[in-house]
Length: 150
Image 1 (cartoon, rainbow, N blue to C red):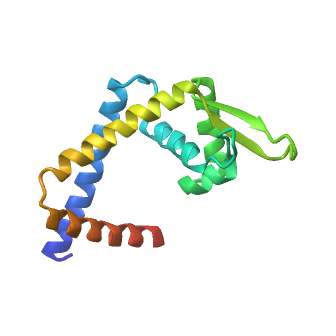
Image 2 (cartoon, rainbow, N blue to C red):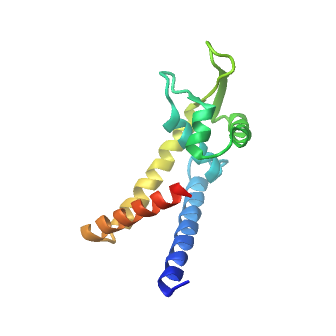
């Protein structure tokens, strides 16, 4: 590994760990202290995957969004359902289709989490010039595409 590659590796590992640590701390201070970062990400995926008027999302769509198996998602959904953040139901037309919907508690958690991300990005961007932000955005888009291909 070259010196630049080692430095890049260090940045990737450290930034990932720093963001995870800050995210965990934010959740612990927020309205939903009993959520893990992974559970918060499941709630975000349900919100982003919602396709019908009721705001329900299909389990398959949520699992695909998270790049996890439906079995792994089922375990997470069961826990979130027991904690009062999700409601699971069967499709009215197709009983094989299982959907999940956010509860008001989940929406509150997501609002708090979105505020955390907005603050984090604003504070990070405040340290950079417009040119640095543009260069960082381009570089991160390339990294994201690389990781998506793996």
